[in-house]
Length: 180
Image 1 (cartoon, helix red, strand yellow):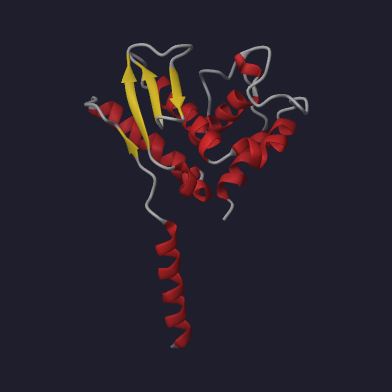
Image 2: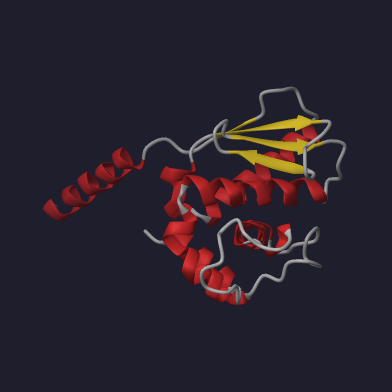
């Protein structure tokens, strides 16, 4: 009997320390199909990185007509992801997962936590700046975000032709996000 009571008390202690689950917010009216894509992608993302739950935090997704420099962006200072519309049901969740990669990169300090190991797994020369590279697709930051897409979605379509994500990088980022 005392063992059962101890187990219950420990379980309650864990639940109290876990804090509120991170949330994703759509601050504008969106079609039901978009809301479903956001919910499904968010759920897969949070499930893929359970150890990062406390640093993920809340984020907003805003649909816009134009995104400077691409089809989506993440602002760490605003905790907002902007995704350009119109887009396709195939492209939308991949763009969202990519930007969620930038969210954990910033909020969970990925470069400090696993940056050197990640760059090694991606065969990026040591000493390369996290945001450096001759082209956007050469930067460790963008390769990290694409690794998150691979983990969350199980496949990549948009940038698969310009960014190779190694099995070692997928394993490293998955294990980092699952550590307890």
